[in-house]
Figure 1 (tube, rainbow, N blue to C red):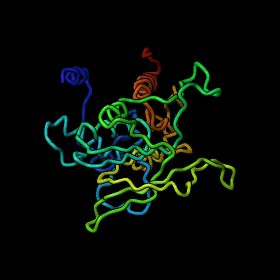
Figure 2 (cartoon, rainbow, N blue to C red; figure 1 turned 120 degrees about the vertical axis):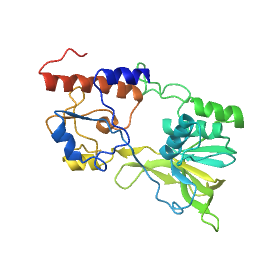
Figure 3 (cartoon, rainbow, N blue to C red; figure 1 turned 90 degrees about the vertical axis):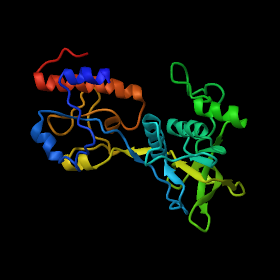
Figure 4 (cartoon, one colour; figure 1 turned 30 degrees about the vertical axis):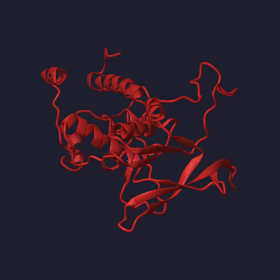
Length: 288
């Protein structure tokens, strides 16, 4: 709160509980302000439209994580709180978001946790095509997998596996996930794609599934309302270090510009877009 009060004293106005395009017309931004910076993130999750997707107990990872964080901050369960307590949890996706789901499920007291990863298990040491100083693409345990291994005895990740359908009970509740091992092979167009391996099917008990398969891009309402140009991945088109969009005075930074990425890039781009916005408004800037 001290930090917020310092920012407010410097002239920053925080407008909370206001959704642009819903509570505040998007056009108002352009009318009332000389410059607008969009940092809306990349929040459209990738879905898994297989049989049984509509069963109760299947959630996007960010719904699960956001509700958990809000509950911790409020000190009481929020309206969107989802609990993994006492449940067999299957997490589909092997990235950072999936890791957070593993750790959070364990801390909530899940009965078991399995993480399906469609990619192969990384090697123990650098491959020939991954030399220093590139980031080492090697097998490692992140905090979530370390906690799972300590509690349940093993890494929860099942590599080269994918879900084929969700099974429910008579009341529409999820009770199992059907999986199969895959191999990556070239399709008719010569592109590598996952192909099921017959005879490797498994059925995993599950009362909760968390979909953590990445994101498709930023939410579209503001982009559509302003008519902003987008790149091939539906992100707002704006060059790194410039951050200028197709509309003068409108800037974009962070995941909505570069696609889903790490928080350190959010720091970097936040500083950069502030510099370029200052330059646009003042004609010059002293910001780094």
